[in-house]
Amino acid sequence: MPLIAAQHLYKIFGRRPQRGVEALERGATREQLRAEGLTPAVIDASFEVDPGEIFVVMGLSGSGKSTLIRMINGLHPATSGDVIIDGENLAGLKGEALRRVRREKISMVFQHFALLPHRTVGENAAYGLKVQGMNRAEREARATKALSMVGLSGWGGSMPGELSGGMQQRVGLARALAAETDVMLMDEAFSALDPLIRREMQDQLVDLQQRLDKTILFITHDLNEAMRLGDRIAMMRDGRIEQIGTAEQILNDPKNNYVAQFVHDVDRAKVLTASSVMEPPVVVIGPEQGPQQAHKLIREHQLDALAVVNRDRTPVGVVLPDEIARAVRAGATTLPLTERSATKVGLQTPLADLLGDASRRESPLLVVDGEGRLAGLIPKVTLLSALASEPVAPPEPEPQDPTTGEEVPV
Ligand code: ADP
Ligand code: MG
Image (cartoon, rainbow, N blue to C red; front, top):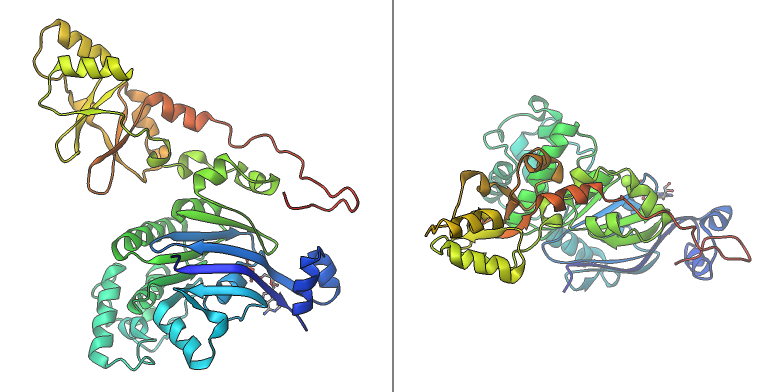
């Protein structure tokens, strides 16, 4: 079951907004609504976020991202449609029942996280737990734990003024973590940070997500950030979600001209990761096996390279057809494993970081998962062709409604 579900969500600002929903459903444009004094901020948005997923909503400023996230956390009632958090429909909840869901299930991190200047960092991190009626000792324990998770151990007694901007933003993250909710909503949480610190925070978020199994709805206007963080990305424009997909799907198969144009300039080397271009091993061999066996497997499966792995699937290295043929001719009894054949990279390593290495070597890279087990191989040719491939298909004209000339949904 998804932890967050948005079903045909609309948010229209202005008087009697419901008439705007009906007009949009009849095919009215945003401009027509604006002329009536209505602002359609979110139009018919539907998506689901699975437990443990980082779901990114990406769009330019004004596209409706903040309005969407405020409906998800119950801050804005939807004009129409449903928000379902962990099976509970927010529309059916009022007053204390709504506050309880928001408190117990959802925490939120904002772009401009305002720390209380006269409270300590620890008190700031624990802020929010007090209203839940939690006692002081427990609040402090939670805050200390959360601060250590974001790399701020030992700073609990300091005042916010002693912290850099990046560290202050970490306190915002710690406050959300201290709430120990399953769902975290983050609205441009890293957008105000310097690029280097921002990158660090992104890595830390991915790491925290994996350790704590949080479900994260992350909002950004930065495509590279979206691609780095998102298990899936929703591309938003003018209040509508244009496409939902993985970074690879959006890069390689943009649903319409708008998305295609948007991703056109993305640096593929930075966005695509080892996991997106690797080839899962068809067959592997143990280090105790001999060249004869390797030779047989290479012939049978027409392999360019054969991975050698231990019993726990941690890789030892790679053997190549030429080397194996030579070893067989020489009557060798052990596999010709060399140091240089054992370069290992993580699943999330950007292709940009692999390039220097690949151009210097003949044997493929070994991609390993978090436990160091073999997940796949990247032959040199794959790496080079992944980077060389056209970013997007040539743009097709958007289908137009012949009578009005307006764009119609594809
Ligand atoms: P984003 O977060 O993507 O920049 P917003 O959700 O903040 O976009 O805004 C989407 C649209 O809704 C904008 O046109 C904005 O001016 C409008 N809007 C947002 N909040 C309000 C509000 N409280 N009242 C009227 N219009 C609003
Ligand atoms: Mg916003």
